[in-house]
Length: 312
Image (spheres, rainbow, N blue to C red):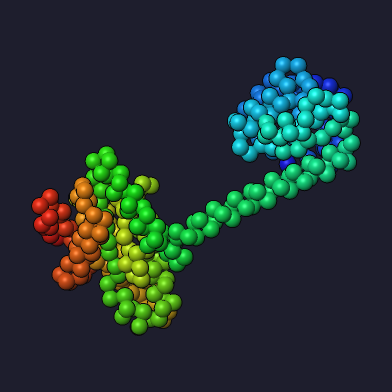
């Protein structure tokens, strides 16, 4: 990685000698003669490490360090000072400095400290990336790449809370693949997995950025549709149903097979329990199956607790 270094010192001889040495060590190096100039440069350019003297006119090195750490999360600062300086290591660290070196600078020591700082920086980046990957894996279904059912209930609780607070409409879709067991028995589970993978892709193409889709379990899927009324949700359900039906799935034997889904649609009623909402969506989905499958069925939540079915 070609790290970018900014040297800040009001002594031009020190700036140039350090720059030549670090460039020969294969770093990309720029320099500034003051804290003000350094901040102007940082506002427009990307830098990995700032190496700054403490004693400078105007903004001194500790003030510069403090400003950098409050403004930029991804820049490390190495502070330089003379042995006779009144400023201490603890003071520099308290301002956010990652390293502290004394003048006159010994270039070999500077290089070792810089390498260590950059290595720690890279390890921090890799650790963060790993944590983000683990977080994503914890909420993602490995096969379909949709969210998993555990994340569904977390998000559903948040969405319900938002609806009750702001009185927004909110709808839920629940659907599963018709006769999927027979498909697996006929063509094998690998072929079934291909159907699930493709279905996940189809679902994603039918949603807005604010919507979220989940593999609810086995061949069942669910979709959260914020700020969406029942009729709008039904349009989404019909769009997915139609796309799935028009897709030609090829079995391991090369046979073209049509897959269909049965969809249940319902909307959230302010103040109701989450379990009631999910149960109503489940009832709507099974109503689609009972009426012959490959259908979208709405169940309207009534304020008196009595639900009304509506076929699409």
